[in-house]
Amino acid sequence: MTAILAFAGSARPASPNRALLEVAASGAREQGAVVKVVDLANFQLPIFDADGVGRFDPSAATEPSTPFPPAATELAALVSAAEGLLLASPEVNGGAAPLLLNALGWLGATAALKGKVCGIVSSSPAAGGGVRGLGALSSTLAALGAVVVPMPVAVLNGVMDARLEARVKDVGRTLAAFIDRRVPQ
Image (cartoon, rainbow, N blue to C red; front, side, top):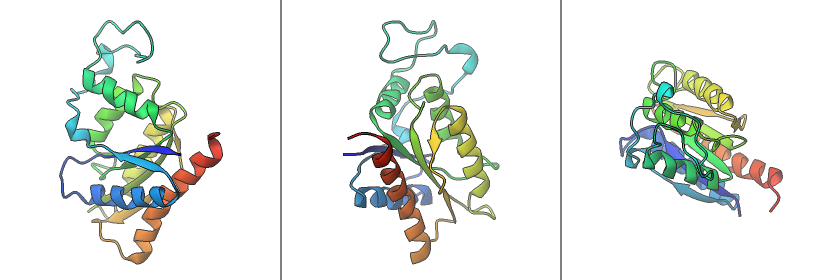
């Protein structure tokens, strides 16, 4: 069974991005995937500083000279165990949310994202509903070695009619189907 880890780049419980994440996750579940949704706010991740951290492999016996925070190790283990990721992020200044970028910074110091298949969605009050943020998030994920499913969906202010809800669900369905075809069961 396909295992997908899902998280949003917003810490606000009533965030439209969390709602989008749940809709996309339901699409993946309809495709037969097991989706685990985690809250990034529950991980006590310090601000990532690339100058102070070496590469870290959770399965290796040695660690970098700067200790890796336990929360980053835990998140990297969850990502490594999943076959794919489902991410939702508001657009902030034309990019992804700082909460998500910080988590990706820590994950980028590991090999957890290499080859990981990702589906992405965004809701934002910005004019494009998060389109610029999706482009920036896609570029960041690609730079970290992830593969982004080419069906991101942006929703202005999280307001979905039946057509948009179906498109958001399709992100989850497509992600699960892509993984099923890519990963031998």
